[in-house]
Length: 158
Image (cartoon, rainbow, N blue to C red; front, side, top):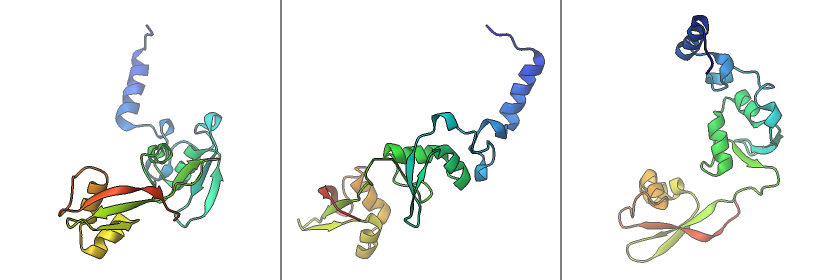
């Protein structure tokens, strides 16, 4: 068991209470660790799609996130498929095809069906609450005003 003297404990306590920007890259605005230091030895190559639609190949995703002020965790959740975007950016591994949006099918109480791409646009065009429509599509609610939503088997090009 390692033994720490009082000065080491005091320094650890100071870092814990006050924080130390050199220990994390999650400081607001991306301050903290210089981008060239962050995980450079384990950096992978990724394709980043900017909010305006342009694509860029990035070697160090952590450094890119710091530079743009994007939380690292959100970017890696996009890579894992748990999120669609992080601050408007999309991320994928090199060699992985771009994800295509799913088409959804809304089934009305009378049995008629309608296909759509965007929950928000479709809900607003019909006067429904977009959050409730999304909740039905994600399986969090069984229906909304009798409308049931499911994903279509085929995917469509954007």
